[in-house]
Amino acid sequence: MRLGYFAMPMHPRGREWAETLREDREAVVLADRLGFHDAFIGEHLTDRHENITNSLIFLATLVPETDRIKLATGTTNLSHQHPALVAVHSAMFDHLSGGRLILGVSPGALPSDAEVLGILGEDRNQLFGEAIEIILRMWELDPPYDIDLPGNRFTVTTATTYDDELGVGIVGRPLQQPRPEIVGTVVAPFSKGVIAMGARDFHPLSANFLLPQWVATHWPNYVQGKESAGAPAASEDWRIARTVFVAEDAAVAERYGRADADSPYRFYYGKMLAKMRALGRLALFKHDNDEPDDAVTLDRVLDDLVIAGTPDSVAEQVLAFREQTGDFGELVYAGLDWVDPDLAKLSMELMATKVMPQVNAAIRSSGAGA
Image (tube, rainbow, N blue to C red; front, side, top):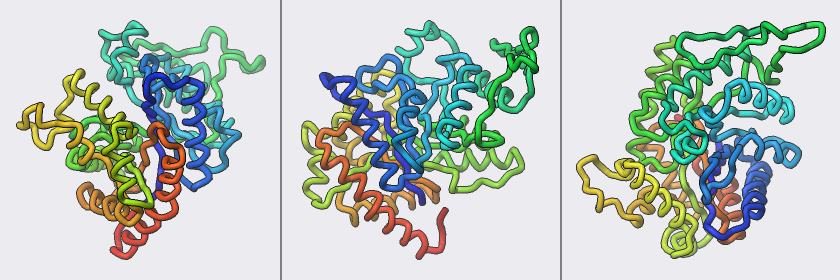
């Protein structure tokens, strides 16, 4: 099982923007040094707490600071810009990074982002479907492209201006051929989008704020999508994000990971709980659909969704989680605000050097795994 990193870092009000950006960059540099496989960076335009506005721009600053880690948008919100821009900017980034791009994609879920762009009333899932089709075709076709799909608002062509001798009207292609890996974040139980991912050979990343029983619903749908395309599903292609804190002392792990009023984990899930309540999606945190809303408390959400403890304890919890979901290829460590930088860095180090070796040894001894 690989170890990845995912940051839609939720910083408390009052911190300087430049300071949090430096901190978020430092976390990816540390992940690279510790041997994490990839780093996914989220983006929002209008969120004070999640304040990376463009994941590709942010990741570009890390190309010279990292050596091996794959640099992944987590995600590029395809309703926010013309797909031709995504195609050409992503292709250039792939060359800048030496072929380390993973293109994470989604429609864009934050309503205030949609409102500021004037698309609040539009079907962002439809915009997403139109955009991804154009991006792929722009990477596959020769100029002048002439992409005009039925019902699609975007027509992409350079027929009027294309001149091969002058070198204009030509879109650059990514370094990785036929294309970079494409990953879709999955944030809903029983997601039908996962079926489409399997059919298109995109890879799913299940969100860290989903209960294990909801995460487990993603794999059968991915298998269904792969089968529809006549291809086998490989568990190594499935990523699952989890919110993890590792400390050398169990009391420290419990305090920083859950109990303290200033715990970044408590802050994160307090905000997530408030957002989901406001969006009418509180069912994500319910053990079953018949539970009353008041059963969903912050303390219960923390108990359900935060894996915290010593390296031995966290390894046991990860393996128990895997028993609930089935085999998967990558555990994606969710990055949060560094309330205590020393504890935050040590947690990442212990995860890479102590927890994952135990987890992988146990998987190998069981004779199953990615």
